Length: 269
Image 1 (cartoon, rainbow, N blue to C red):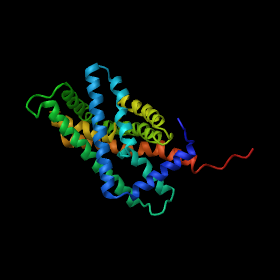
Image 2 (image 1 turned 135 degrees about the vertical axis):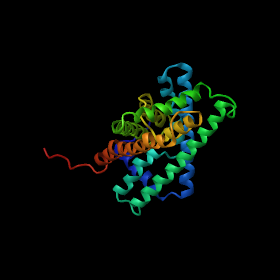
Image 3 (image 1 turned 90 degrees about the vertical axis):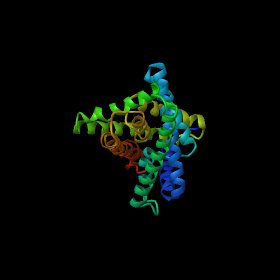
Image 4 (image 1 turned 180 degrees about the vertical axis):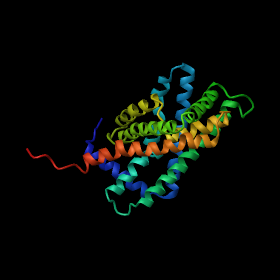
């Protein structure tokens, strides 16, 4: 599968982070918008498969098709730039500043949200025949997911909030490993296999992904979920975003960079 050794693909990670800082506002928003929209469609697909088969594992196995599509097309998810962009600053790439990092994160967040929201509205129209009937089984499932993963956490107070945060950390540990997977091979098949494995794990374990949630919760609200916009942000999106940032950067970005680029001196015999 034309495997690249870690020292090679970690350098590619730093290069990718640098290029995203310098990318134009227009291109950053377009790529983020399309990433959010494609991942949202993959979430609809996975939930639909789960409802039809009655088995969540089938949805988890098939969900990565959307992730693979968007990365092969060069689009950007917030969970990916959380990991790649700071590495360019840590590596002291010329012109990469903390301000540039936050600018990129902000633009990608907005683009991802708008893309996911577009699909949420479109699928809500599909599932209700233009809001002329009650949501179908998939629509009701989405509404239930929204309630369970906001109010379900809220009942535990601070402990619930930190549970979401940790689930967000675990999510982007796996998702960012998938992002790296796209860089460890020079063939399409190799990239897809390397991306598929960690993404299946994250979805099967129902960890919290900020961009997937940008679709799930607006769609759930539109289709009658018994929770509010504030419930969504306070009891899911905010702790999930923070967990995604900490988990992806700590467990994937910094560990790979520190041991494959800034390696420690070899031990004397």
